[in-house]
Length: 399
Ligand SMILES: *Cc1c(COP(=O)(O)O)cnc(C)c1O
Image 1: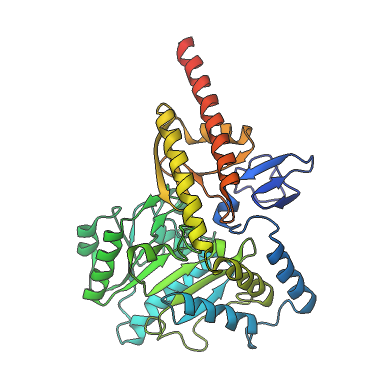
Image 2 (image 1 turned 135 degrees about the vertical axis):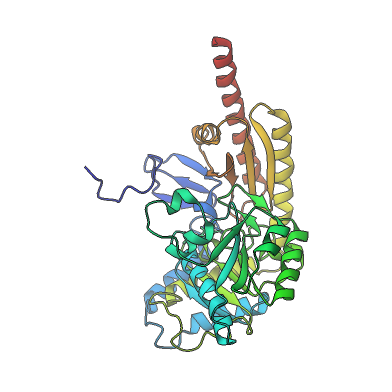
């Protein structure tokens, strides 16, 4: 018999009652160190006092009015994002998938507005993940997610990972833009080289295309910059943000330049809940912390410590770990053993991590993690590696 909750997730049989900082607690009071951050969502950890305060204050005042009225919190958050980034304008959503949908629609509308409605196709890259809506599934192009859901939404041309010649060759009269995650998250923490992002920027400029970045996972401080593309010294035309921007409250945003947004006039797009007062209170609360002078530098400094320690573990356990990759507090451990095996061993050590493509486990600690928290996590990964090694050694001996 089907479960009351639609069984679309293979869930770990574990639940939590409350959280504090980087730790989650079960009903029995067992503490787990959270290096998954709800898949890069709990950017400020759990129950951050400032977020609790701003959400509580807003909850006592006003929850929802609809976008038929001005929403002061929205104007404030948009202005702050505009001030801190390449963008001139922001549309707020409730999720990453919706932020991507807005990005895709905006890119198409840009060309339609310019008198070229036939330019609606977007070039994407193998290994990408852009969401679970029909259009974002087509953009991600992963067959296992597309199967059974009818014809794939038209308008996405996928080329091999970081293949510039293939991207060039895919440009045609109908191309509207190029879409990429600066670090592929679900795909296995795959870094896009800065020079590749710069080459895409140039390609877009040469062909009048829009560069769309999906920074839903790698953005909002995760790499030690507010947005990951800043490392490459380029700016996109459109950017999708979500996950960490709400610190655990559902918030997404589509950021764009004035030029890219030229077709998005009154009535062209909408969302009932997007940018509601509760979400905006929390979004502003997250920025209060992340934009504090020194916060992102602190993330970079702590991230370096994490990276060095993970590299040391990688050297120590060549039988378990193949490679360490990532940037900032978005790290991946590519496993020699099955990634599920190492993830289970981490869980036994009461450390939460997240699986990804290419046999990788993702290490995504909250951005507020200090050296003590990070070292504790590393110690648990090390113990997990010892366990995995012991199990596999005894297996080999038994053969
Ligand atoms: C999570 C994610 C999405 C989808 O976000 P949802 O909030 O689940 O809709 C899209 N792109 C990337 C890179 C993501 O990590």
